[in-house]
Length: 77
Image (tube, rainbow, N blue to C red):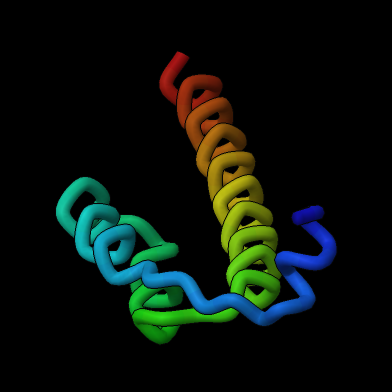
């Protein structure tokens, strides 16, 4: 079965374990509230879309934190 046909079947996958593991490992993550709003079972195509959004937010957050750290180091010198 190709990936395309698998996605088109709207197969649902459980992300319950992922949500709980993420919450334990990263309780202060800005992604946690968004992840927890997702249903425990989600269509594969929706999961891929949500993952892309969450990764983009994480990338933006990481870049912002790096910029803040660089500015802070310059001020402290």
